[in-house]
Length: 381
Image (cartoon, rainbow, N blue to C red):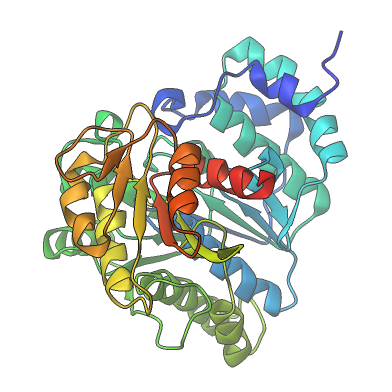
């Protein structure tokens, strides 16, 4: 008997986790897609990198939509519902459509041992094809060279900042990781990267002579965080390239305005909670947290507490020393001399801080799972 819910179907693939769920290679993706014979869209853009992939993808989608295009956007992970991963013109895929596609693809996916991320990618490609979108934007999961999103050809590749992450799969040095992630440019007519470290820049120039570098965005952004100017600049450079080469039609100033107005869940997201202010950020590695520091320094109101909670298979203890100067209370579930308190969950930490300080300014960070748990707690309370 067929499962009648999205969750029941997806549970058969196990819980999603980029590190634990990653299955390198394109064979399963080709097997998943082969029965459907999908035509290529007018334009397909891949986005890879360590941090900023989602932000860049959302900003680019907004600009392309401002050009009057139908834009399919595939990102990961989701925060509250799986449907968030697959959007057309910013609207998540309807549950009825998702269930229909799951019924079509899941028996074959289970038979060939496809991963959660591979199934999600195939669902996105099928849905975008059915809806005949003008442009597809695919955010890579782990790396790029053997990632599910690079199993299909693309016209443009974008590379966000590279840092150490997923070392078990991608390598222990920045150059090894750059090699894996720069595959996002493979067979693309256009290749654009943000400015990386000198060594990585040299490697990219040698490996991809036609690649160009994007400059940081100059216009004020709706998204908080100084690091977002780097992501916005990459999205803007992509738009400039597409307009210049007449792949799209539109007004550059309109696109710039669309990029500047994007605000995203879990990226220094500001929430008013009763008399308190809670900031949520999905920063999940040292590079992402280092990028936040200048924004924390510029905050008008000092932070009364920073709560750091991440997945069981990750560890941000090496960031506690960096964060401690920005708050009077640093709280996590990991033991450290830098902590003011050790609490088992972000929900309990939020409750305790707000119980003692109803007007507190709180930053919660560590992962999208932490953002999701915080949002659910805020909604419940």
